[in-house]
Figure (cartoon, rainbow, N blue to C red):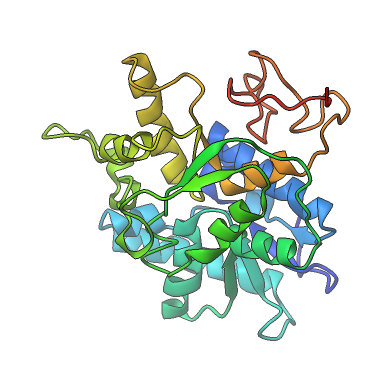
Length: 298
């Protein structure tokens, strides 16, 4: 945990974000990314209680005063953490595209000077360099949903797909609205905090598009998207319009699932099997759905 200026042997500051610290689904993504970085011997630090909201929801909902107040506080904190570091060594990795966008594109409007990367960009680089090598096939059909603030706003389309492409066994299929034509899950427009009373909820619309491909996994790379898509999948399952095995996972969780050798010790992420797996809070790789059957080879 960062306490004063970061030591020079620390490569990255990991910006956890509100969802990654508070929401149960977001916490699993945070843990998955941290485990992967440890596997790759990447030195990183977190702010802990020194981190506050990036201010993105406030700006999206029109409260510019609150956004600037939060941004100025965070910039002061981050300047202290990066004290003495030259440009190019002031790098933040974020799992939330909204934080990624605010820190990287909006904070500079207030004088910030940081390099900000998304966790899929970093993990993709680690896979390419051979520092993370998927070894366990994940024999599932997956479709990837582009988060708006990662894709259309920041043009990051390739890294998540390259990570999925490196996982043996995955059958990846694209929705007809993807990449620069991607369709929002709703939270980019603050719909997570609103009740829509006219027409169909936007997250349901997007989830129906994904379910048309009959996937086992709907993957994404944003905590807002995970919440919106998970809620819609649960609703569809309750209506009998989606299989109970369908799950929503971050790209990092799928990568972590593929990092554990078949036949690994019981309790290792990705090694579990059976209907009860995934119901535990520490199942960060999302290995516990009915769609997952990792275990010792027959």
